[in-house]
Length: 302
Image (cartoon, rainbow, N blue to C red; front, side, top):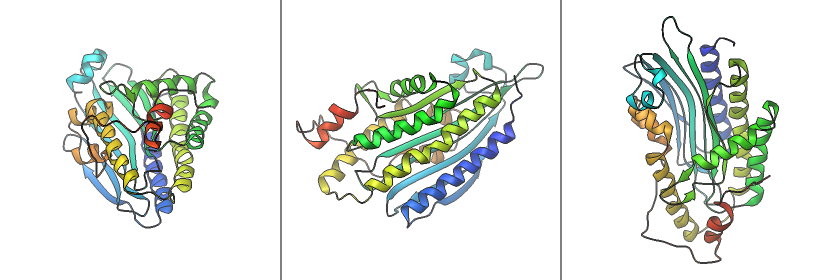
């Protein structure tokens, strides 16, 4: 098995952050990402990049972080006791883009690498990541494009890879207390070390590089669609589901907070405006109801 090249992973992640920010700025045409470099007292740091009040994007965050330490939080070692007593490094790029226009979906992506080391023993490492799409008003053409791009990123690594990680995404981004998916899925993988390091790293890069190919054409097609107060109100209501998932279930959020990560960067994924309503049900047959009946239920899109 090839030796993990931590520096190569770090360099790739920083390039990925830069390229995604550049592409999103071009799409927006108005706002730019502000850069916030930060250090973590107990080891590591990162570069948070945030865009606000753009012409297309209400808020977007693209975060690179690298944290390290001598001990993992108890929540991590409880499920992985072999990690106890090991120093660790975790690095990744995580992003969430919240558009102004309700006809443009919210998107999330994350690619990450983890390694735990101990003198005299082989390192324990893995990759994780993926991306998922959260529309407010569903469009089959957009969802098919999203999943077709995801499949193309997986295909060089085996015909079973896309179906397996698509299924994992559907199961992961699921709000048990609502009995509904957060969106229309995409890819999700974690603890990936079933191949040697070079192949696992290549797969992470394929996923990371394909995100903007999946998302940018959708934004370009939908950003000019006219909308009114009704659509905006529904968008803010559905954003509540995003908040619920990230604060209750998301592994990255929980790990970041429990490991002493930077709170501002961890919670940058939350939307700037959101609404909750008591026991609200969309009108049968409406465009809002179609999201629940035609798009949120798990299905094969390609």
